[in-house]
Length: 297
Image 1: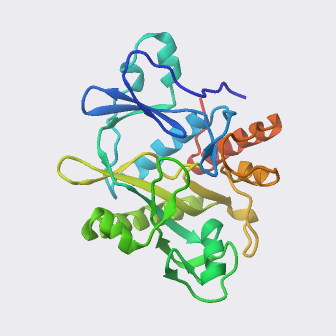
Image 2: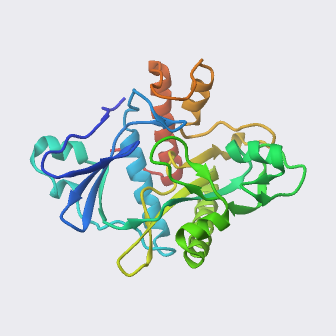
């Protein structure tokens, strides 16, 4: 097992914020350093135990997709080496292989979720209403079944607590109809292209979420992370079958463990047993290797 970073402690840059997983620092007025920690959140609660190497895996995976999908939409990357914007060996070690320097953009207040399969909250919604986030689907679909076409089911980003699914109409009210349509079309295109590629590597991308920002000219830019094991459901194609929830290369393994506990999904979260931590770390690495052919240095 590699080492783990629960929280970065850089002194050479002003800290702008700390997300569930990422620590954000200012680099001048127009750029930011994003450090991907090994924190894990489940059910929107950050767990007390870091998952060794998880941040490095997420960083490598997002960079892979940013590079692969750059022809569809511009992304936040600047190409600046994160180690060049911090000071001292300790800070360089903290940012190595788990950070990016990005353009400072204005984030849209929504998460762009694309679902290609009927699972998770979408499956629960469908069982109750025959729809997913207000989108009518054919009758008689089973759990984990592939949808006729991928659907766009946006959510609002809750700064604390749970993200809430919203309709396309509500999205249009928040960000404007033209931008909402553009975000929907780009998100579905990103998902389709990534899914087609992942299929050649034996992985099904069941669903994923994207985040977008706008630059000074109002252009849409892909921000945050893209198609990582934190923001997507990855299933091994060789063990996929309709009607059952497939095993996955993401934090579903941790979610499944937490579901066996008497925990009400509010903070503080329970500690994880060492074997769950080790298995989760292994699953993240396996997803990276399968998808990209790359191993962690």
